[in-house]
Length: 285
Image (cartoon, rainbow, N blue to C red; front, side):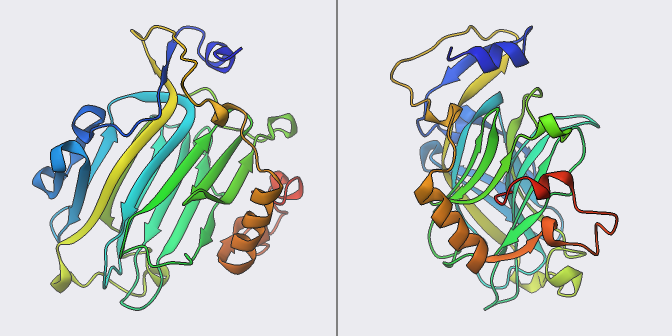
């Protein structure tokens, strides 16, 4: 039944299916910090975030969601972006929060961005994978996708899967499935760790730094105390059971073999008492 996952996970909160259409940033988001450093442009179709030596900026979705497919097009900070972090992620609130992260770690001119991914469940993360991209993410827009259902989380870039985190609750591994999350995005300074382990600092002579967002899609279960349960036969609900097919497995192997630069499942020094349990259960984590 199409609403089963929503009903089971949120017995007291109703769900609303949200169609996959690019919404206006005016209608779909709230600016959370940075004041005028965050600008909604082009009649609500585009949004830019800026960072200077005084503050970064950010926004969040007006709605909370429990499972869905979330697409955002980004064009990252060009030139010398060392020390900056641009983000697109899902998160709940509180000490035992859930979170699914795309973070884009800037670098000095001519050196590649690092794409940092992580999954938190019940307040615990430590599941990082990092990649270098096969294109320049600063010259044009590219689509970054978080697909989250009750069986797995898939990270995609231009519809190419780069990472899968499967639900292994049967093995005692927490999986985010009961806490509604909002979509968040931000641009902020993290030069104590973001670029080459903090060795390269932000050069404020290049400020303000600007990242651009557009075409935010949330094909998802919206939750809230006043939402009425509805379905639409016209909505694309493939994300509810989506997995990686043979073509997807070939693509993810290519990404992980050619472009992955860090995988927590290979970090024996960090996990000296043994790798996390899920690292032994699935290649695509």
